[in-house]
Length: 47
Image (cartoon, rainbow, N blue to C red; front, side, top):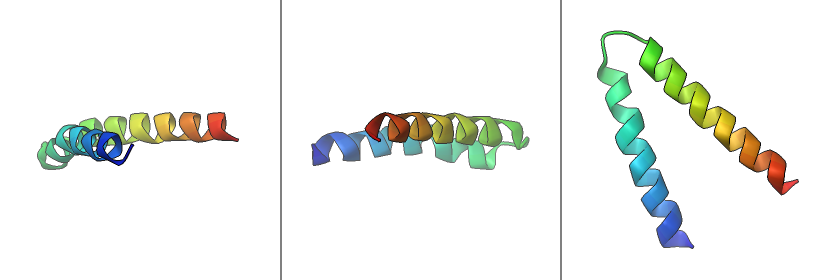
């Protein structure tokens, strides 16, 4: 279970970090919105 979480975190960081250095803020904002939305959806399914 821990290995799966670490692998997921590494994949998400590989997608998210490059958006920090893009010239426009839109890719960062959209990807962050997507990740927060997915996290909220998963959290909602737990409760």
